[in-house]
Length: 306
Image 1 (tube, rainbow, N blue to C red):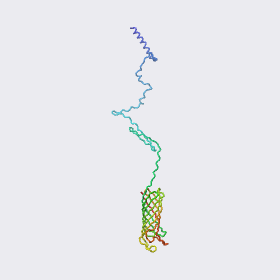
Image 2: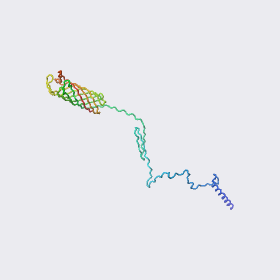
Image 3: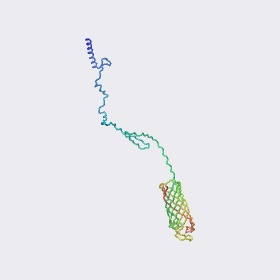
Image 4: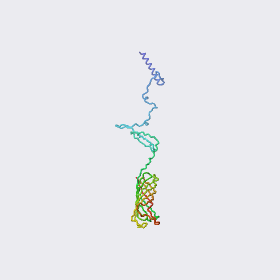
């Protein structure tokens, strides 16, 4: 028993110097039976390697604000979304701002295509027109052929006009004239006329036309002289009836589709249709008599169409 204890003490005494020598030299080959596994101290194990050191406190972002008690934490609102909607017609783009939390606008797909050519303008169709013409007029008589120096007549007139096509119109008119006639006697006369009007350029604003037609008239004359040709006495307030034809040219100035101004010049010739036996006109130089008369008529007026 004493011998075994002696051997154990000797073994322990020899093992302790060898372990200390191994720790001092730190040259323990891996797998050697005399090397002990030494655990690192707690402080050394907690230290991270130098390469993984955390950034300084100044570089860290500030912590999020802590909401007060009783309120839930809210996230900061994101910036609004701006959508540019282009237009194919060359207009500036439309800017649409979508507030956060609202539904985004529908997706707009813009396709640049060549617009089709516009259709030709519809052709204007002629519409039949009715109209009323109001006019003033003056009558010119042949003074150089023996007429009275003060001879001259004037008056007013009105006519109903129907224009079924652009180039043609019918005009039914009535006029009233008064003044001194060829023989120097006071006269009043009312002609009725039916005329056709041929427009040369009906599409223009200023339209040139020819006119012509037939007319009838009734006149009342107050005789100043008491003797007629051949020595026969004239009855006072002698009445005359006429039938004749007329023709001339004129211009119509369109102020609007409804209004127009016109001027024209007409020449007429007519004969008596009453049963009077005394001639109306007598040439003082030759003594010749006639019941045929003529003259020139100048008119200007305003036409209203519908």
